[in-house]
Each structure stands twice: as C-alpha cells, then as structure tokens.
Length: 107
Image (cartoon, rainbow, N blue to C red; front, side, top):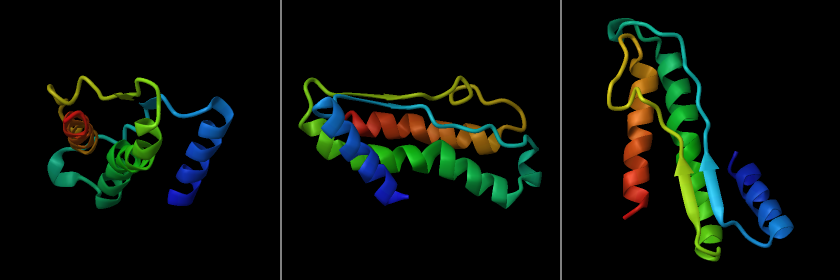
C-alpha cells in the first residue's frame, strides 16, 4: 500500500528529524518445489514480498534519504542468491533480483 509506506516515512521523518537509514529485511520462504511444479501464486507472492516490497519502499524513501545526514540503505539478502538451493526457485530468484537492485541503487 503506497499510501501506508508514505505515511510511515512521514511519521519517521517527523518523529526522528529525518530518515538517515533504511533497513529492508522483508522476506518469506515459500513452499519449495522443483521449478516445473512451481505454483504461480507462490511465485507471485515470493516476488511481491521478497522483491517488490523492498523496491517500493526504497523508491518512496529516496527523497527522505537525500535530505538525511550521511544516509545509508541496507538490503538483507540471502546466501541462496549466489548459491541457490534445490527447489528454491521462487525465493532464490527474488533475492538475487534484490541483490541486483542494491547494486543499481548504489550507482
């Protein structure tokens, strides 16, 4: 919910005098299955929580961070990004994309 994210960031900025750090640690580990048996709903849920939620929060936070004092962003990934586990496609793909999002955000 974009409005809830903006409201949370506004509240943080007002209570603490700004937003200097953003830690994104959202994640779920959906039911594991071989890639040929992935439930599309599980795939979408994993992408939504493990990737999209962080991207939306980061995007909304950038204007606040630009006003911050030495701002910092921490995206929590997984060991499964460089070394995925068998049957962990939904999770591993989303977290690898999150790792790439962090690299792009740092440019």
